[in-house]
Length: 184
Image (cartoon, rainbow, N blue to C red):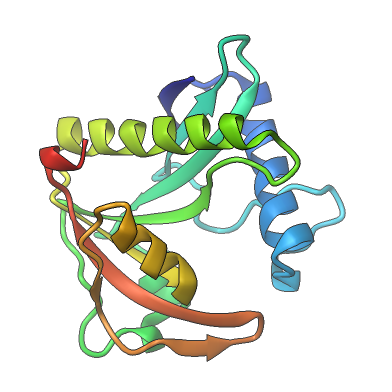
């Protein structure tokens, strides 16, 4: 598996971006039931998939899409500041070295476990390598409460930014995670 840093500016193969948006729709709408994201074209694209977005896309050895995440600079509008600020007790962390990690889609339940695990590992390594190259010192994220516990199990230092809160499809918590080379 290989991870690639891509932008929505045409520098990435169009079929990778299309596969990413379709996979996100499958994961977040079809499997997790996030109906607010449903689109007739079967692609998850929102206002934050703009020119500021950074994507980490993982492909297998044959070039087929396997996983992705979206990273957003926090100096401008991002999901936590615009849509989920009520999940944060106090000001939403923002700054040139803080990015929001969102639309985390590491694999697919229909794929073999070994493929998903390899894709997840490649995605996390790709995100960390990009962060270290770009001078990112922390990520913020809104995580499903259960995912926050798993992230800690993977060695992430998830610092809660507020208490878990219910939303239409479950319970989530806003967190901040420092970026450390040791996470690699």
